View 1 (cartoon, protein in one colour):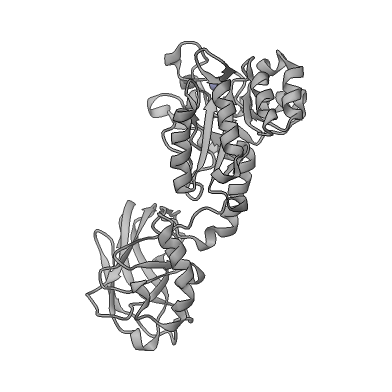
View 2 (cartoon, rainbow, N blue to C red):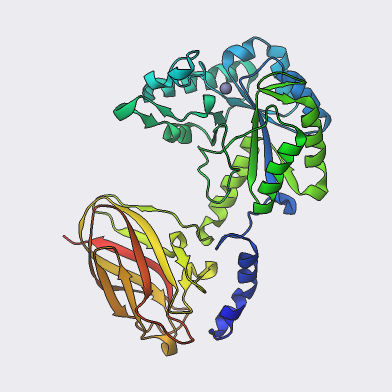
Length: 413
Ligand SMILES: [Zn+2]
């Protein structure tokens, strides 16, 4: 609250927003708005369409819990009535490939190292088509067999996450070590944490971690039975369902595709107003836009202000850092978009990369509410990954530096 004492009046309206932000535990991110005030999301999933899965599905039905089953066409064909019933009960049926390709080191599958992107795409579409023919469902989710996301070897090796992103709403990995951060995650590379051969106490530890951070926990298993390898125990599932359905525990339990759709919608709706630091890529001849919303505020009192889509500066120790990848090196004109009150204007700032910098004074814009764009100088940008920092030129006592919304680099001819 100290931040707000000497500040311009209009910022009083931000008090509530700041309180929420400070309590969230994330630097500038609010808690994810799960439905009905729930504290976390939980998805239960099973891979390979194992023969025991319809039994597991029946247990889930007792609790009205819907899971995601990642299946292969041949396995579905082996028990069509069982899988039809699973669909009827509202579980999600999802894609787990045609041949279950994994690394050739396993020795029992078609090696991913020998796949091309073209073949991968064909087979994913084939699995979609065949499963849809049998069960009449359209698939929006995929699970990477063995959790592996690359094809080819060495110099020819490449990720097929972009392909999954093109064909599906969600892609799930396996043997991951952290739950999903719904604000940050790549929807085509969701983490999947092992549920097999664990007792409820072990699963509860995962749930409690996810719940504290407002995350999305995706559990992944294989067989659903009382014993055996790669088996999610029915007794554990029962306890898990009871716990997840107890409203006191604040858990939204739903299939991966359902939660994925919700996360996507919330992000589309809110990402414009939530500060999530992430790298900015450039393409040749296009201006590079460093927006406050993608910058990382560092310092004692730097604050991202969603209603202005800008960072506000309150001390000389605060700065904002961006990461960017420059495809075309050379001279760029630098444009700044900012606002400042007349009485706070005039302080000096520095915009710097590792090799060049621009210094200037914050010019008047008329008021905190009026944003203005102006060229502030020229900068030589190197090719490739680099950091850009905007900071006050020196310490100042009280007051503010400016509200900064965007820095744009325009290539000079
Ligand atoms: Zn599998």
